[in-house]
Image 1 (cartoon, rainbow, N blue to C red):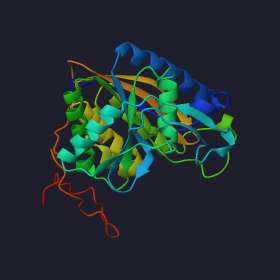
Image 2 (cartoon, rainbow, N blue to C red):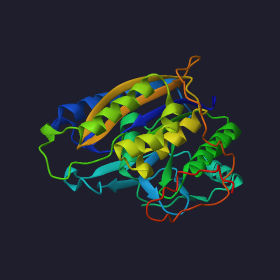
Image 3 (tube, rainbow, N blue to C red):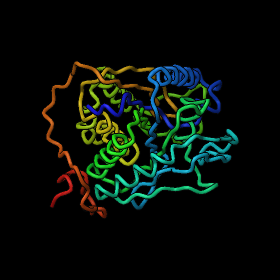
Image 4 (cartoon, rainbow, N blue to C red):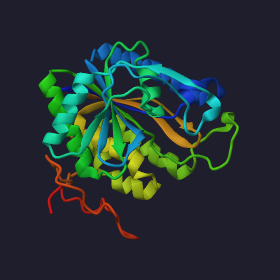
Length: 317
């Protein structure tokens, strides 16, 4: 268990619950679930919110938002018709730099970003505006490196924990991501939204069953199987669970709570919280490597028919 991280949350990064919840009953339920989760986070009284957003993609290493008060106007890349989102956030710049230093100490390539107008992604904006509407809890935001493997993702989380230990701060870790992530391929009436396919829905329910039992590490360990069965995108869907599980100490000793699960234009949108517990439902034999440092990229350019995640050596050749 990581005592520096007092709670983990999974939230969807689509803009509908923030911008147009009234267009669909399920979207409104997600909006209300955000509000309920916001109360739970406030009661936990963290020093900082740490957001890992799958909608902020980076190519070389990870980036960390470090501007103390980023202010801008955002229009979602896919949902222009929803209009503008004004934002002004409270960022823990000191911790952002400490995380950057800790990442370098463990061999990761990271950098901070700190300039006016740097675009914050929709997932982070939705999470912060709905979970921290009064900006009372400082935050930092991490990008999702689209080429990072499991080793790099695990080491990223351990670096953040290093920085939290140094700072003495307690955090809530928030993964902004979907479960299944297939959109409808044609325009639909929002009132007729549904999960893209029955298979997606069934795998979403299996993941939610694990989450409700607090089995976060089981989800992490089974991610490749779920990816293969449900054909979800590992860049955006399973890296956050590798990250989140490591932030929570790579354990199933957690108490899970499902706030809501609804379709978001075909994708699986769920709000889940996981809190440290003294009981575990875990029954798997874990065989994944537990790397402490990152020693360079491997198989970044994979050949046809191969999976660069299938032979994770934990950063060692």
